[in-house]
Image 1 (cartoon, one colour):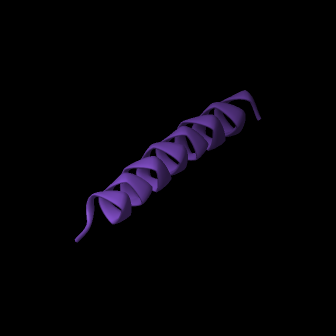
Image 2: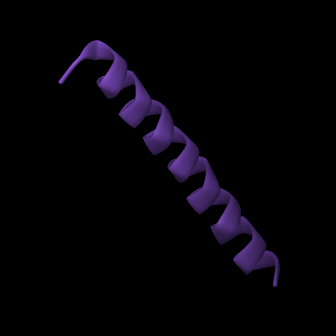
Length: 30
């Protein structure tokens, strides 16, 4: 894979991780 592709996957992973953490926090408050 090219460096650009790896960078995109890394960003997507980090963003997804943030969404998962946010989802768990919201679920905890509910």
